[in-house]
Amino acid sequence: MPDFPLADRLSGLPPYLFAEIDRLRREARARGMDIIDLGVGDPDQPTPPHIVRKMQEAAADPENHRYPSYEGMPRFREAVAGWYRRRFGVTLDPATEVVSLIGSKEGIAHLPLAFVNPGDATLVPDPAYPVYSIGTLFAGGEPIPMPLRAENGFLPDLDAIPSAALSRAKILYVNYPNNPTAATADTGFYARLVDLASRHGFIVAADSPYSEMSYDGYRAPSFLEAPGAKEVGVEFHSLSKTYNMTGWRCGFAVGSRKVIAGLGKIKTNVDSGLFQAVQVAGIEALEGDQSCVEAMRKTYAERRDVFLAGLRAAGIEVETPKATFYVWARVPGGATSAAFAAGLLSKAGIVATPGNGFGPAGEGYVRFSLTVDKSRLAEAVARIRRTGF
Ligand SMILES: *Cc1c(COP(=O)(O)O)cnc(C)c1O
Image 1 (cartoon, rainbow, N blue to C red):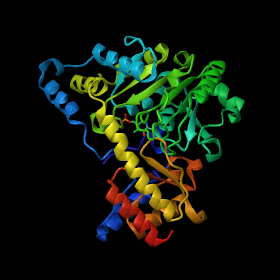
Image 2 (cartoon, rainbow, N blue to C red; image 1 turned 120 degrees about the vertical axis):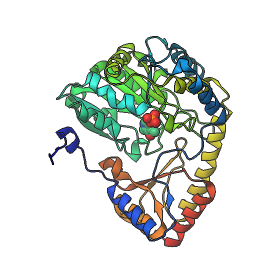
Image 3 (cartoon, protein in one colour; image 1 turned 180 degrees about the vertical axis):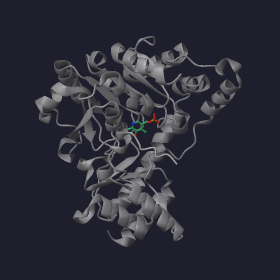
Image 4 (cartoon, rainbow, N blue to C red; image 1 turned 60 degrees about the vertical axis):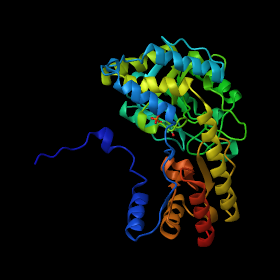
């Protein structure tokens, strides 16, 4: 049998840090343990029925069975522009400032192929969603971490970025409301980012899939609300978290026409667009009844309150998240993230993600996802209390 060694770009990736947790989860299951999985960032609720119905109709229409356009149907891009105008007061030209994506992950991963040459750098938050670094590595670039620390509200310290890194950087990634820390950013932060990007000539890539998942009246701003933002960057968005549509693969990027055109050029060469029936359902999601969004917020806010009360009663330190379905908790007693997560699983049957899995600056934290119902979350915190971490 021939040997097929993996290309360096794959074999050079950092080791899969969740492998140990996966092994422990399998072992615990095999022992018959009842597992409460708070490890994955995937909504457990179904897509709202009015969106599913639209998809059923659109899937039956032969008009939608052929190759879609690369950049998305004009009507879909208009729906995106309309949503940005209503939600953020941001004006977008649907023809040049919006592109559809096969899930926002696809666009995030492809962006560096359009703008990063081997030897260039990107600035990526640490801890972070791994795709910013991996997309950079696939393009031959070097991801330079920007540590997110509690004392800075988990925002990157823009004044601490070395000037050599600023001059090599082609893209700077930010993600607010944030996965995994649940931190939020205000327009003042985005304005400082626009200023830095225009002085150093790099692209800002703001990843914002959790903008609608927020509580207690808080509403996250868009990066594009900052004056001049559209000249220096793009925002990635997704229906995945807002409308429980992770499986549908429906996202979009908006902003700088040059950046959108560059990303579009890559996509023209590697994919053939987003299934039109999914785009039709996406239009329904963005323009139809929004009461499902309010219901989603209520569900997670209730879960959050049950879970936080229990964690605090167990002596675990945690901030109340204003947004996202994540709880980013300090590991008690000075244990490592990996040891604490392993103990949670083997002693309490709870899967949580060790913070260092998102980057070295995540050490000392674990991330819980609020993706099981209230009674299971109550059971989880009861087990944590009983186990006595
Ligand atoms: C869930 C998530 C995404 C969205 O992914 P899709 O590909 O649109 O489903 C993007 N960024 C972050 C940080 C996420 O957590």
